[in-house]
Length: 497
Image 1 (tube, one colour):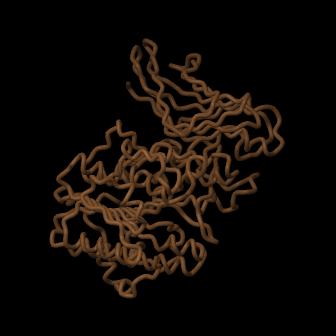
Image 2 (cartoon, helix red, strand yellow):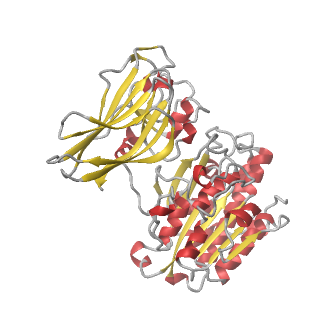
Image 3 (tube, rainbow, N blue to C red):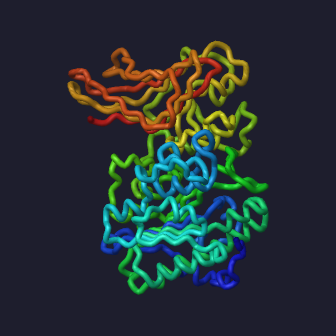
């Protein structure tokens, strides 16, 4: 395949790009406009290197929209390859659901978890859908035949041909939802490494092509009556030396850049995840996500931060850990308002960062020790709580790990049922145990769930029988053990059943 970027594609002026990108509309005016969505996938592109490159069109999209750095999985959930990555972006579910574990797509569950363009066609068949990619498996395999038009660009044309086709459709057709995948940054990563000038040059090339796509939208005769949401993302990162598939932090990197009427200019979020691309595209087109679909993605237009996320400004750098960079902010033992930690039975010593329940981020926690499945904690978002007896024990502890995370008092109605939900990820080794207890109006806590075997990352739902006369409920998460494994908790809430 040719990896050269067309000279003509590099000549679009910065002034034209600035005019093309700008804020696409105001939220108030957008309500009367026709919603349309463009998703652009930049294979193997690192957000940090976009910021280092000459990338005026992407810079303008970020300045006028949202930038959301994120991270993905590693084995055993799936390697950091294009097959699992694009399948996650396009279906809105993680690899444990769509079941794509490599680039062969063997065992894929696309009938159960179809691509977002197929969901659009099912919900609103009158809408026009279009997908074009430089990497053929995306349009040959991931997107279904229900999509109006799927084009796998001939390899000789590569990204230049993909861009030309997409520009023509955006400028001259009437598409409602468009997906475009550009491949050259990944090619440069494999050939020269992410630390190379060639990688930056490739980013500059695809940046120019992104500018052409945005300019095509702006040139539409009907643009004044349209409300476009532009989403730019990547399937994985790259190492400095080149390559991906492993569990290193650079290989696990992705991002979402969003630009549109409902997106605040210059905003940054840390709670956005890879499957949110599909959910956000559907939401923009007025297609509500049916819980029966089992999507992992959430529309970025509907943020739902939890109490732990408010701790991000309080996060500290490492104390005892040695594998985490000195500049990485990532842990605190101070709970958010209303929460508390009972360490009265907690052993002494050990690694400071993990002495009792801690609040941390994916970057900080996974860098503490790679390849122990911490990378599979995909459903926790932003800041989460973790009890990690394994890491705590790395520095001569005394006694056992026995720590309880205690929630605020949630209002409940006596004599009814309520639903306790939370995101969890639990890895077991005897004699470790996780226990969920609930107390009503300060009474003795009652165990409602116990963990003594591995539980993959998932949302847990527990039905609570509220005693007559009770008005409040408080949840306790107690982890006991020693040099064993860990327990993650996030997104805790109690709601009426």
